[in-house]
Amino acid sequence: MTSRVDRFAACLMAGCSLLLTSCLDKGLSLQFPFGGSAPATTAATSVVRVHATNQGYNFVRPWEKLEASRRSGLGPLIEGGRVLVTAELVVDHTYIELELPDTGEKTPARVIGLDYEANLALLEPSDEKKKTEFFSRMKPLELDLSTAPGDRLEVWQLEDNGTPASTDGTVIQVGVGRYFVDGSFFLNYVLRGSLQYRTSSFTLPVIKEGRLAGLLLSYDSKEQTSDVLPAPIIEHFLKDLADGTYAGFPNLGLSYAPTLDEQLRKYAKLDGIEGGIYVRRVSRDGAAKQAGILADDIILEIDGHRIDARGNYDHPKYGKLNFSHLVRGGAEVGQKVPLKVHRQGQEVTLNLELTRKPPTAYHIDPYMFDRGPRFKILGGLIFQELTLPYLKAWGEQWVNRAPFKLVHAHANQELFEEDEGGKLVILSAVVLTPATVGYEQIGNIEVTKVNGQVIKSIKDLNAALAKPENGIHKIEFEDFPKVIYLDARMAEAVNEQFGPRLGVKTLERLD
Image 1 (cartoon, one colour):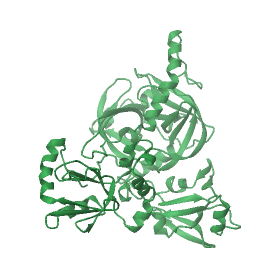
Image 2 (cartoon, one colour):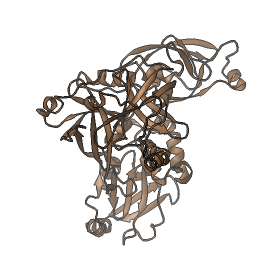
Image 3 (tube, rainbow, N blue to C red):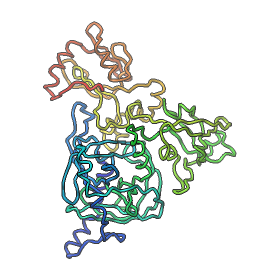
Image 4 (tube, rainbow, N blue to C red):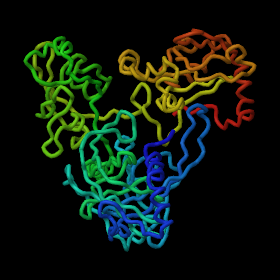
């Protein structure tokens, strides 16, 4: 699947190719737009090239890994000999390398902090001795937390020969948007200015008056606008890492709808009450559930900030912002926040303790980076836990192309979490073998029981398969064909040949 930053690089190449050709044909020097013809003098001393070798997992053939790829970006140096990049740059990495822009000197690096939801990663040289020596001629950048709409920022880049270059742009909007992981929304700056493609463009630092204002996330060549991951989110990330344990950014654990519809407002008894958002569902074990928020509640106020009918509140510097920033902005895990809801005609005050629900706690994992899908192969039957990456294997239109019932389960997993908990295990495919004759057309159906045991994880399935009844495995499903039977001895015999036949090194991954 093409990432947002891959599209960014492609857009830059498409947008500037004609300009480059025209300038070279006429023997002209290329000037940077928005007054950026003079390169920033500190880029070469405060930024390093970061090269990552990445190799993710194949979620259709879960025993395999995908072809390795290589990504490069520019990481700003910060205090303590550390380099900041987007998590997207180092996702599923097998090797990371830092390169000085002036000399080309390189050193291996390791990740010391990572948050895929906030799209941030912190790196340092793998060799402790190199932390001081490698960056001895460089100057770390400080964060700038003052950026507001109308400010001018610079996007730093480097030519192939290490010469620094910068492009100016103006912050035209501050809002809340998606970074990298679906469903994770954070503060972002929208920057207007034309960027030109150069190598190492996967991550680019954004600067205000010599300080780090953020990291570039994506670029739209048609609109000439960029999304920037801002310094306040970076500050939260770094402060959280400072004590050696990382809690992450809190989440509420609910889905909501605006209350603009008059019929909805009447249903919720909101006559004479302004604003508020309607709680559609509350996730199991989330902060909202623990605080006592119920479906059909109307959230009126969070931490003293009134929420309007669209779900926005008035931020003193940025203007209208989505209420999620009150939770995923400056707030920390464990912090207690007062919250007011309208419930059946009455106003109720609740005490919300902010928590973070990790991806592994969801009924269907929302992302799986740096780890492979959990699966089990028996006799040609391929079982695995349903994940969003598996659904996305159907391409960008996966919502319309993936099996309907699996898409529906993902869209409504709060219901499954409440009723069942655990994971959703599916029979994803069947390989024709002597043990599976007649079953080869079955696939993408939920497994409910194996040998009489209810299945809520791949470990449950593995344990149940150790107990065939009279030498026969009975496997039950949510849908057609409802039940199938598998000869246990034949299935084990097939397993002995399955690996060598298909080049499968392992028949299971349970953790």
